[in-house]
Image (cartoon, rainbow, N blue to C red; front, side):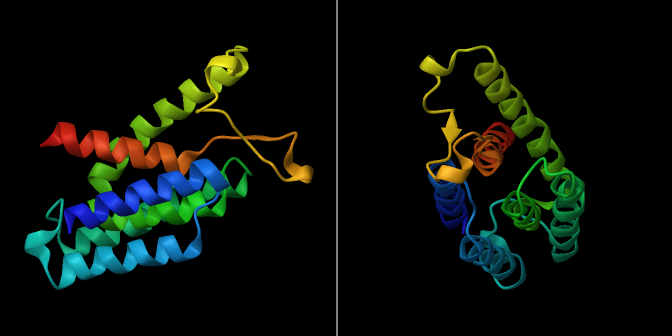
Length: 156
């Protein structure tokens, strides 16, 4: 299941970078794969966590970011993706992933604010829709995905 988890992370990251959203079907697919992996084939789970730890991760992922959604700092897709990511990795690894992804988001913000936008075309994501042209978005699902891959690679 590890390779499916990686494909799911990469696909969600690309969707977030290009479309600035994490589609509901991507979230549902990830949740389904996480629970199939944890419940039915735990020996193939990329992190080897229990069902309880997976559920705790799911709730931690949701509750940890819902306040930022309510304050309009992030989108609902970021919160849902974080919850499903918690179901995959459990709450302990999710905390580390949040810290690393926040670091990526800070770097993104510094680059955008420091007029280095000419050199950061891959990091700079702006909307092509007319009503959103003035807003700039941080592709947080992308940064969560990148942080997950880093944490899992360095942890093994």
